[in-house]
Image 1: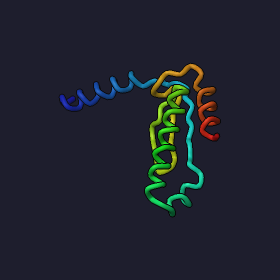
Image 2 (image 1 turned 120 degrees about the vertical axis):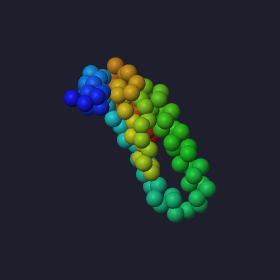
Image 3 (image 1 turned 45 degrees about the horizontal axis):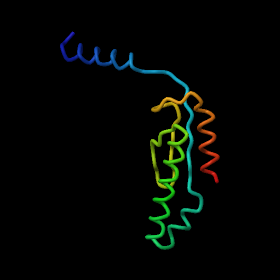
Image 4 (image 1 turned 45 degrees about the vertical axis):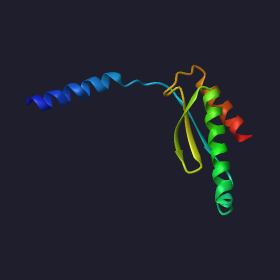
Length: 101
């Protein structure tokens, strides 16, 4: 086996040992009505959107979650994936309910 293949095999073995299987919870938040809001004043939209993202990140963090992806007005958050959270199901639901209001 060549040296480069041997290194690649060792790297794959090391990566496989680091893979961890665990249960997580995932919450997605969507800003309803944002498309209509975009048609208005861009400056007001930017200010409103910034406030929305700040509130979502704060709520998710307060419930021991981590915001991983923001796509448009959708915010994806995980619980017990990056940051340990023993009660991740409860935390995810509580964050979602708080974001709903």
